[in-house]
Each structure stands twice: as C-alpha cells, then as structure tokens.
Length: 203
Ligand code: MG
Image 1: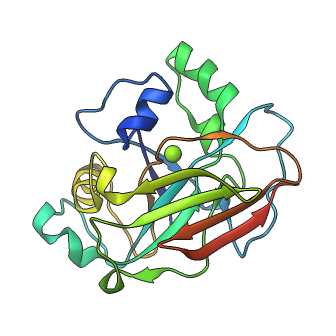
Image 2: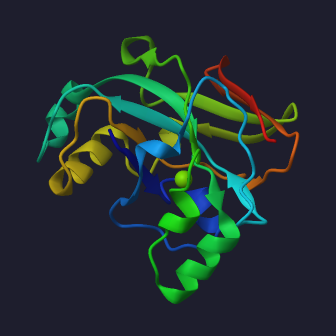
C-alpha cells in the first residue's frame, strides 16, 4: 500500500506557511514504513529540530482505480479517518529553497500516525466533517471538510490520473491552519466530530 498526501488544501494553512494558493492539488507520497499504528508513541528523530504536527482527514481506498471520473469517485471509498502528517519543517524549508523533493522532510519512518478505527461515510456529512487536534488538552487545530479547496472526490479523480489507486491505500487530504512543533512528552488527541480516534505521546 501507499500513502498519498495532499498539500496546501486549506486556504488558511497555505497562508500561514506563505505558500501560493494551488490551482490543482499538490501531492506527495509516503511509504508504508511511515505508518504509526495503535496509538504507539512517536519518537522524535535526531535529524530534525522542528517536527510539526499536521492533522488531516484520511480516506481509505477500497477498490482499484485509474483515471477515475469525479462523479464515480465515491465508489472508491467508504471510510474516513484521521492521521497526522508529521513534517520535519526545518528540513522541508531547506528543500523548498533549493527546489528539491520533500521526501526527507515528509516520508521518514513513523511520520504518518493513523487511527485504528475509521468511520463509514454513510454516518458522515462529507461536506461538514469537523476535526480537531488537542495538544496537551489545548485545541491547536480545528478544521472542517467544508474548508477543503479540493474535496475527497476531486482528489481521488486528480491523483488517479497519474497513479493507480489500490485497495488499502490511504490519502491524507491536507491540514487546516494551526500547525506547530511537538516536543518530548507532548500528548496528541485527535477527534472526528467529537469522537476520539487518535491518542498518543511524543517521546
Ligand atoms: Mg500535510
């Protein structure tokens, strides 16, 4: 399986990092080795001094597809969950300046914590999913799917023009404003419509 991550999909977040508004989805890939499951602790890597959390809605692909038309994109997923797109911001800033690929800053081991339980889309209003991150019990990110520049169906249609989607692939759909640094012993709690889906510590 693979993890596809969308960048700059929320206007306020693109602004906070001084990025231009995208006219089409920006995406990159993390390998399977990036997954961090079962609320296991995230160990700060020694190659960065600035690991940022980015809370994101995650779509789980349930059917193989390529060149998926937007109107049929809904057939390719049933479940939505939450994940963190951990980012070595100091490294990413360097790579961006040099125009180099972001993998070193984005795709490192355990950079993609993922929830164990996903929510069936029939239980959700896909255009009004609230999600939030509490860092040490303070709300630091509070987003809603209605703020996405590209919605789930746009993303699936766009990405599948380039890359075949396979069963079990995960798409991290971008983060709202409020990203920030984590430090040792931080606790991260992630809620989808007030349901706690992720709860883990930084070590
Ligand atoms: Mg992200």
